[in-house]
Length: 152
Image (cartoon, rainbow, N blue to C red; front, side, top):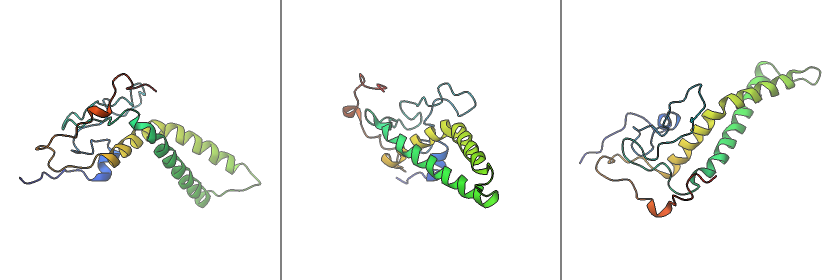
């Protein structure tokens, strides 16, 4: 059988928070918006291909490191951009203004960063399958313990 090509590439899949296996189903139950209640609630399985979104107990603990790394990279990027456009000086408060700007930007971006890091983390462990309509996702039931699920 001929494989079915996805209309989305890898980067669009991650940024849009789509299932990495089929690149069609949404990972999160609610779309990203201004209401933060339930913004991180994930579908237990991809609604399109059935891929489990939690592969094992504590699977998403590593996303803290991913989110931290991305936040550091955004901080470095904003510092370089600020330095090139406005500049830093010891004789005035431009550095303090940058600290305030960067802190507010990171706080506002935090919900998006958490969703993005989960999508990126899952894509490292679940690869795109062009034959996803003909094959079933990997069975992860032996790695799951329902009693320990969401036991943070």
